[in-house]
Image 1 (tube, rainbow, N blue to C red):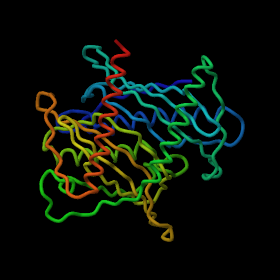
Image 2 (cartoon, rainbow, N blue to C red; image 1 turned 45 degrees about the horizontal axis):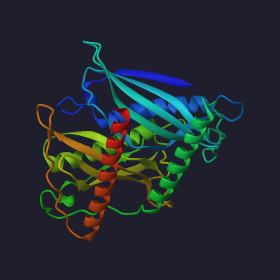
Image 3 (cartoon, rainbow, N blue to C red; image 1 turned 135 degrees about the horizontal axis):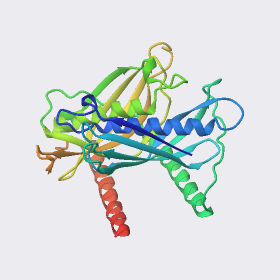
Image 4 (cartoon, rainbow, N blue to C red; image 1 turned 180 degrees about the horizontal axis):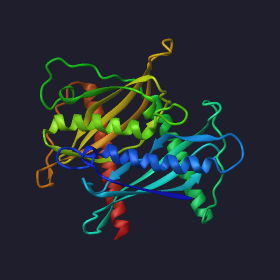
Amino acid sequence: MSVTTARIMRPDDANIVGNVHGGTILKMIEEAGCIIGTRHCNTQPGDRCAAQLARVERTDFLYPMFIGEVAHVSAEITYTSNHSVEVQVQVMSENILTGAMKTTNRATLWYVPFSLKDVNTVTEVPPIKYASLEKLEEGKKRYEAQKMERKEMKERNGEQLMPVTDPEPYTVGFSQSSLIHLVGPSDCTLHGFVRGGVTMKLMDEVAGIVAARHCKTNIVTASVDAINFHRKIMKGCVVTISGRATFTSNKSMEIEVFVDADSLIETEKEKYRAVTAFFTYISLSKEGKPLSIPALKLQGEEEQKRFEEGEARYLQNKAKRQADKQRQQ
């Protein structure tokens, strides 16, 4: 089973330079994943259900997309467990003047189906047929790996962004940013949960503000580490999306983003951490060439610790990219 969507990129999808926002691409990726995930989970008799996004694996932005280009998004189910669906998505940009096409993104998403009768009930997922036993085993390994990482990320949640008075330029406090958003009906799925694509678009917006404040240049999303959706966000909640710089290399900047939700109606419920992720940005000149990133000025042991963790992720991802490049040669 597969699904393909397409849409032309408009001015409101991009920044002032014409680069399409990473959040716009992430939102389209999630919409395609949700469509195919929900379709598949309703192919068997029983309760009708809707697929809810649980996790997005690391996503690289291979090439920028621009206003006037057409984004083609293709989604395919590649693995199913009893209660989750793995969807792999590819995004291609088309220059409709020349016909040239480029692959701009590849992403892997995990969905969980919830019953439309009872929003707290997870339904069974119909199995798929695999091309080979090897494909099945590879899918099992990916499933177990993401399950373990989600658990690890959930355990470390809880930090909050504290306001900084008169911060020094290039410090964490100088560029940190927050956005407050009231969840309305247009943000939600059939269950009344916030759509994952809406959340990711808001996260990218906040991360982009952090990067722009730090660099004072045109910035674009280079990659997103795994996005973990720890808890559902319901219609009527107020969400606070917070971002702070954690690491800078010569040509890239890592930003931690977390989403906290607070119910306006059910006042007895406490504010909770709903989503976490790390976004990486690069700085571009007017000609679209990479610029050096100003070094992050660290203040205190906690910032030093986060910087070292970010550096470890940076080196690990760099080594993986180099290994993938060698395999392709």
